[in-house]
Image (cartoon, rainbow, N blue to C red; front, side, top):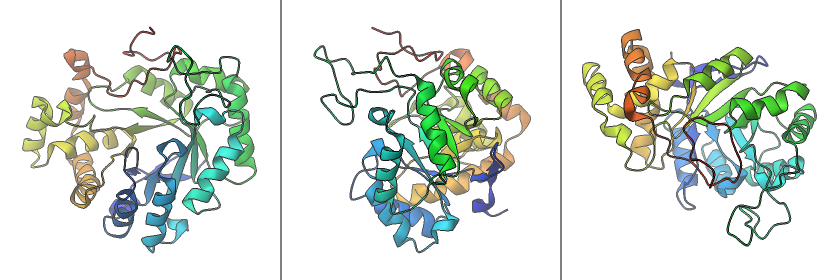
Length: 313
């Protein structure tokens, strides 16, 4: 099976390439070349973007420079918190920046509405320094607007990002459309087994961001992961990505380095085929055996409902 052919079926019958290129924290001047290389040379057909990353114009340049038709590329973007009451406006800005007239997938980036008239367009803050959240805006109203842009044909699928079970339960009772995916921090140190079981029961596909952890990640030197990699003559990164792929998750490794962009997609596929049930079981148990760790915990002044999340100050 060729790498781009690895796909996962969504609850609306559409398919999503199982490996995508993450673009968070990819700097201007780097991201266009990274996206072009990923599509043209490494075989990626899925690019994960967001209005909040501030680099969608360059991502669009990279997509066009690849020479691959738009129809063959799966593009995701995300609604930012200051636009929860203006979903279509945020979407239109992303479409214009990316240079496309539709998205394959549009996600609510965080289940948090920020003050649209605050002191900053991205992360408005209060005088005490806390993030300026709109506590009076119901999440179900955001979701209704997400459904509206889908019905208009501007996006093919809609989903969630950083939603706990509790946050999904704020939208599902009144939803006409169940989210197709939920994009989360997922890796061997933060497997979120309970939440994954819940998502499966609802037909929601898990997507893994930061699948390798963070910069200088301890995941890369983990003893068990390294041991399994050696057994299969693979790299540690291959095992970390292949583990998630083997569990049926969409995996979104981020890199701007050509060699790593290529090795991530090839290695993940190789590892997913080689890992056996014993390997998966051992990797599944890592977090519970004392390695549990989240790397992405922004200081939202909201109870998100996640396990292993820092307590509100």
